Image (cartoon, rainbow, N blue to C red; front, side, top):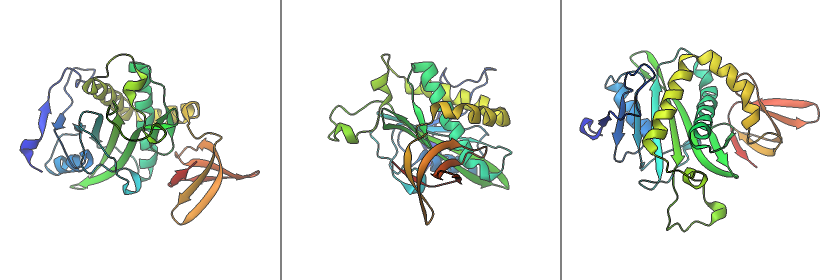
Length: 260
């Protein structure tokens, strides 16, 4: 990765409410925006930096799952910020990012999605977006990196059957979706929410149940070496999934793979 690969973007979409520009860097192609953001942090980049691209070659999700991409059909970005929160709250930060993305899609494009714990957005039982939150320490300073991938428009030459195809935002919106505009709106909402993090976490807990994809669904959860089956019952104050495993017992799940 070379410094010359990063193109600083001064788009009208990348300005905060006080008209100061967000440092946003575009890459034509990158292994992953998470890796590129870590590279910039090691180089001493500004706080609240964003790296975005339309094509990742080694994009990853939770549990090292791969995200296959086509140039021009997706938006991938990572936003980094130094936050004074315990590293145990990374999972809750992922849910907050999901809520911010969900709200932005509805407010700007009238696209209504639901959040699938712990880090996906779904519409019509299909995945539209994935989120990955990580911590990265540079010179004893802890940075949080929020990575988001969004399917924008489908490939007209697709060979994947409809029942296996993910969702694409453009299929649910009459107006053309401008990826840079969408990115600018998300960054603005992220910045606002992260500046008032405790209030944002309270609001997340109060509103999550209205947009919970899993609520009352019977699911299987693989958490480490443990396997559970039960009914999803929302989240607790820590952002853990509440799983009802029998008539009188609800347990918290802090991480795991979900099967419906």
